[in-house]
Amino acid sequence: MEMRRIAFGTIIMACLLMVGCKSDDEPESTGSIAVTGNASNVSLTEATVYGNASVARLGLVASQCVIGVEYDVASDDFSSPATYVAQGVSGSLFTCNLSNLLPNTTYQYRAYVEAQGMVYYGEKESFTTQSFGNIASCESFSNLTTRTADVAVSVNTSLMTGTEADKKLYFCGVAFSESEAGLYPNEEGRLVCRVDTVFAAKDMPYDSYTFTAHMDALSAGTLYYYCAYTSCNGVAVPGSIHTLNTREGAGRANGYGWMDLGLSSGVCWATSNLGAASPEEAGGYYAWGETKPKETYTWENYKLCNGTLSEMVRYNESDGLTVLSAEDDAATVNMGTGWRMPSNQEIVELLTECRWTWTTEKSVPGYRVTGPNKNSIFLPSVGYRDGSELLRGGSSVFCWSRNLSNTFSAKAFYVGASQSDKGCEEDFRYYGQSIRPVYVPD
Image (cartoon, rainbow, N blue to C red; front, side):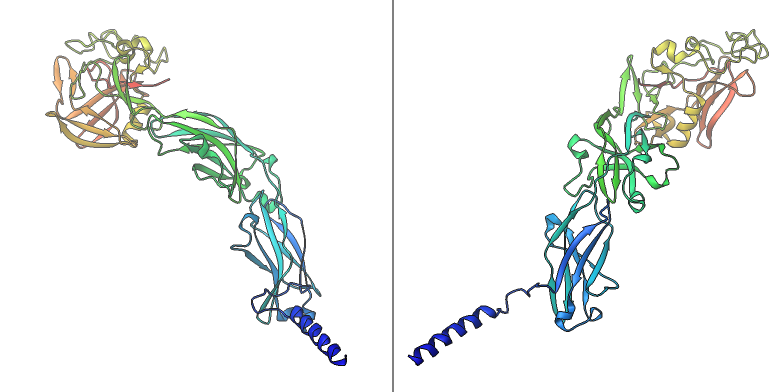
């Protein structure tokens, strides 16, 4: 009987030993060494989390251990956690001030203690950072060309939420895409479409602020979706979605061809001179303000004077007119609505924004003028007429503008270009010059 009792006791003791031991593969008990506390002061990008490290149970003090928290986006479940090492542990309590978090995002975190080659973890806890709203809006666009558009963006910085640190991370801009779906953030809240003119809200001096976003490198004849957006630390909130169609690179209006060169003003230039059937032809020669070519060009037969340069009957010092009216604009009269002669500012734009290459096309020398969008036009060097004589033919380009001289009413502006020089010049209005019209789409 005594032998049976001893045997039975031995079996019970063996079982207890088996239950109390831990295999080498079993994770270290988190027990009460590391305890995860709550989270507070949660903002858009910051949070404070607490923990308890009972390192005295290991016979150690805090300075002999690494104490802190691990945290990660909840969906990643600590696959690549960040760590925050607590500083100045008071007794067993510690605090970690997390920053650079993503807004409107759920994070998991847990306390940990690293000591004597072991890591002790607390239970997983979670918090969700605050969300924010879009503070930017846009509607209209301007300066539309084949490859560019400007969008006015209004921002109300008084609508910003979060801490002062959060507000320094606000940015506003315009997002655009060839698909509406492309404007929505991905799972991480980030925009993967193209954005322009990212403006830091902290740099805006007033509660209500407006800036212009310049969308470039667009494709001609393409529908784009765009919206104003606000981001904070990389997470974006889009606003209302709008659309625009970039212009075709070339087209016809009233039977006449135009080319969009991608200029800042958005005007398009005719592909040929007024009255010409092809780009290489001279077309008609016109005195400034007259709408038909003629055989000779003199002060005596110039219709806008009384036979002499000192008596201009229109566009003079008395009437104050400096820009040709529609009835005196040869391009408008002969080509119809939407067409007109270029202004001197548009001539300067053509000179400064385009690449001018002297060349010969179909045996006619002249300039190939290439715009920022790589489209181009040809300006033939067909000279000008004085009396019945053709001057500088084959060596220079002369094309009238619609603007009167700023200093002498007997002169008007024109674009002049030779192999050695080019510019926006002015000369006597009675001369017969070519006209290269511009087209202004609706």
